[in-house]
Image (spheres, one colour):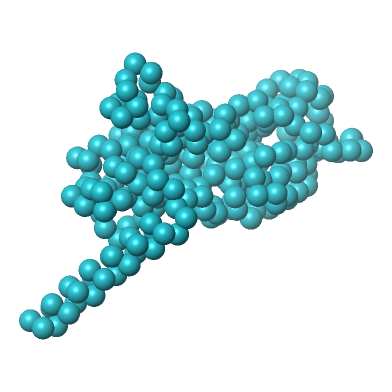
Length: 254
């Protein structure tokens, strides 16, 4: 009996210490809901342009971000660690748990509803609309919405950065996915094998970057700068016989 009481006391101390550390470690406060169904099939696609989140390297641990966090798509691919705030809603949180999600979609505002009653993603609220499986790793399904702590963290990916080339002649629309490190991209350059200089690309939408040059018949290299300033170069990712609609996995990663 004494051993049982001692074990319970240790567990309580550990949970209290964990929650205290989260509350005092510079984490930010927000709320989280969920969408996409129990298998997360409804989260595929989205405002970042990733399409199939499984083949693009993100799986089910994803979330749609509110306007305040989405930042016009600049946050796409970034990772956030999330903890349910058990001090506020102990009946709904799964104590001692946390999850790291990737931003893959946008949670639009709903101005027809008040921000504290249905308009969860209305500016200026920071909000995470998580995939249902991800939400259920930190909170109970019946909660619907819970207060959370969150912080930006590094992304861990397997395999190389992926480049999917869409568009047509004189318009290359390149989706960049499976990016590790900071995860979210700030600048991209492209270089064809017949070019002497790197050419800046511009963000079209989400994680899709565009070039208006004629690059057919050239092997393509890419240079990517992340939000933390780190830059990597993927040389000759696409061979000279590449075609629109193809994807290529590089040998570089963070």
